[in-house]
Amino acid sequence: MYKITLIPGDGIGPEVTNAARKVIEATGIKIDWDIVNAGLDVYKEKGVLVPDEVYESLEKNKIALKGPITTPIGKGFRSINVSLRKKYNLFSNVRPIKSIPGTSNPFKNVDLVIFRENTEGLYSGIENKPSEDSSEAIKIITKVASLRIAKAAFKYAVKKNKKRIAVVHKANILKLTDGLFLDCVREVAKDYPNIILQEVIVDNMCMQLVMNPHQFEVIVTTNLYGDILSDLCAGLVGGLGLVPGANIGDDLAIFEAVHGSAPDIAGKNMANPTAIILSAAMMLNHLGETQTADLIIQAAIKTIQEGKFITRDLGGLSSTDEMTESIIENIKNL
Image 1 (cartoon, rainbow, N blue to C red):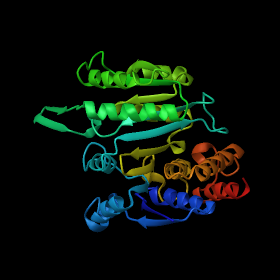
Image 2 (cartoon, rainbow, N blue to C red):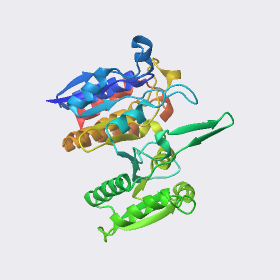
Image 3 (cartoon, one colour):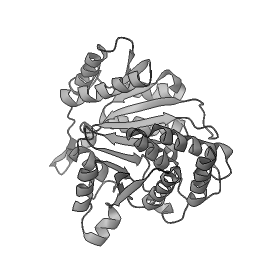
Image 4 (cartoon, helix red, strand yellow):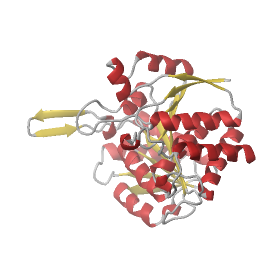
């Protein structure tokens, strides 16, 4: 039996994480869930965003499934997601982007993965206000972090028999920061002569992805670019409701859906549970339960492909519970 931290989150988080739990239970995998929570709902109740028991659970179990947590825009507290990634040095944000038959998209057979450096860069939120009329953000790129994410991407490419890795940067303008990142990826690439390194400036990458995403297999990039490109790529395969994600460090990993907390539909049993269910499959794969992970993925794909029990964002009329039950039924029949 596995002991795993479960952070339901807020908004639609509790609904979709409950769906993921049911799907895992249907496979027969035994998990002792250590349920702790963080976010707005916790703050309203306890006056803290992340209670100590969350940190204690993560540090004890070393692996977690996390629902979406609301981050205020413009004002208020900084992202809890970013805080957890930095605190536990979860340097590798991994987001597989893969087409699912039955969804309506401009492209078919998209199959790529984004490796996003997760601990530094502009996304770290280091900001200053030198005067009332100006604000500044500091972008930090280090050799250690850049080499680390590059190595993770190349190791993945070898494991999955990928032939190309695209490094995304803006080194033509940001010569010191993005220049350092690019140099580090080039350095790691020398150890992998059988893998082609594609060097793509970030604005050109956006254009290339919406014109011909099939030319890319693995993308490695810095924090902010990776966040933007992940959402862009999600749009190529049907939206954020279909894309899983993982934050992986040396000894701790948090798996999460990449979408937000969608407070406007919270509690209405309308949310698409696919992203968190596929994230749970990534988690099981990380644990070595590859056959069970593949079973969950195939069951989710079958439900979407059949189109009978899918949520409104996918063009259906089903509830979260109905879609979840369909996936469970497919698990039993596959």
